[in-house]
Amino acid sequence: MRPTTLMGLSLAALVALLALVPLLPSMWGGVAAVMGVGVATMLLFPPSFALIPTLVESGVVGLATGYLNAVGFVGAMLAPWLFGLILDRGWGYGAGFALLAGFAALGLLAVWMLMRARFKTRP
Image 1 (cartoon, helix red, strand yellow):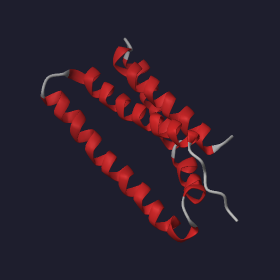
Image 2: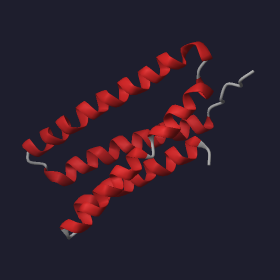
Image 3: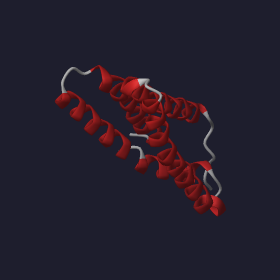
């Protein structure tokens, strides 16, 4: 399976599960959906890092890896804060999970664009 395919499937699962969490009637359904979110999130890391050498020149692979980590950590810091802000404003958990699903949808769009892009050829 190509890395972009696995990333796309993982992100599609994230969008679906995050949108589904607030709609589930039982707590156990929500727990199962959130566990699915965790699995889908962990499936994103290996293909993300595997793609870096196919996208950038060999001299900047380390820099690109660091950039990918930095962007990921910024997202990991902002998402909980924004989720809490949404709750504090009284918009509820549904809006918070919709925000997270929106972030995952943006990632899915980025992967789709990446799949359409030309990969550099390695000598």
